[in-house]
Length: 141
Image 1: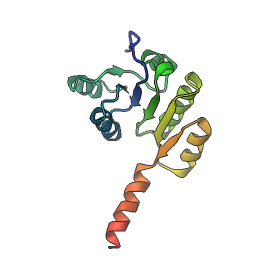
Image 2: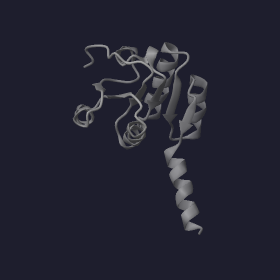
Image 3: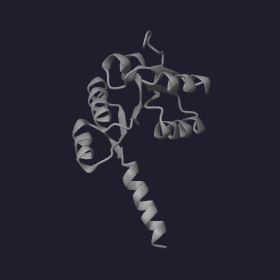
């Protein structure tokens, strides 16, 4: 449960500490960019904290949680959850709370991609589509 507001500014919020979220964080660490991890999974948050990361157990789709990680002062937010509906709701919530934040998210199908654009996402990655294209490219060599 989220209990106190983090004192952060010009940071990146990463919602979801699964495979995609961890890859995002690897790049942020490599580039010395301030970030905070948000995930509902207690084990994932424990792992993030063990790695020395700012991390909060909470739902990144909720205003309450995004306030705790200072969304109004963040420069960007990434929704890396493996659930299109949650990512969409997160984009809507973040955009409502910070009109200027850069929002990146993932999507699993084109219909959701269109909805994410309408909701205010600035960048949408489609990991399954990208992986499929890479596999086909290799098969056709």
